[in-house]
Length: 290
Ligand SMILES: Cc1cc2nc3c(=O)[nH]c(=O)nc-3n(C[C@H](O)[C@H](O)[C@H](O)COP(=O)(O)OP(=O)(O)OC[C@H]3O[C@@H](n4cnc5c(N)ncnc54)[C@H](O)[C@@H]3O)c2cc1C
Image (cartoon, rainbow, N blue to C red):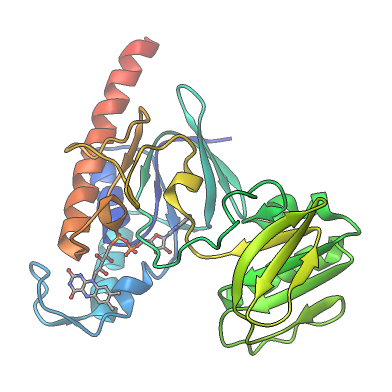
């Protein structure tokens, strides 16, 4: 497997600026996220406070950011990272589509407004999973619930349905799909809590409760402490110093995920600092390896 110098999780202003800076410093970069940058960029109506782009629409700003990245030969790998593990001199990244390796990691995954459900974190790995592709085999011939937050999750449901007996698919978005067969779709259900009883998962909702062998929660963003086990948090944010270093050697964070103010220019600035700090870390790492 190729080992990149720097893996960057997130393609908003923080991740893209980190990638551009790392590229300027001749590092091999794995940039993972959405090909269209970030919804928080492209969906903004008008932005008035980004240097050099006065009165710019979100769409135009996303295009400017992506054009800059592409002009430097940067490619975006479309995937969602579920976990990052520190392995000593490198990091292993587990994605929905693939696994990756890098000598250092920059987390630029933004902030999600969504809070975990009561019982979600407590039962993670004990019936609660974030990745159907990774854990489907554990539920062969059993039943599973999918809480889906985007139509992009529908192929995950089809994949899971090939392995399990029944899938209860509960879309949390305006569902217009045509899932069928052993996938039972119910719309308009709001989940409220997850419990584990006799090895089975119970999902409480504003209507019926659902019992199954496992539940897959397919949010676009997961809690940072879940993404990287062992991270020191500062409230809801990743704790960093002025060099954007976290408590895990070789792992840096930037943008909204490190704290307020939530601003494009702050995110991009921190992306620049994180990349330069990762470059210094790689230089030191190389010396110890020699
Ligand atoms: C409607 C709106 C208008 C705004 N207007 C302004 C404004 O006028 N001026 C201003 O300065 N700020 C504004 N903001 C704030 C600004 O959007 C944020 O501060 C900025 O986008 C943060 O950048 P970021 O790169 O840290 O995170 P984000 O832009 O949130 O990007 C994070 C990216 O990481 C991806 N990601 C998350 N988890 C994973 C994972 N596990 N694997 C792979 N990828 C992942 C996400 O999909 C996303 O693409 C606005 C925000 C909104 C919502």
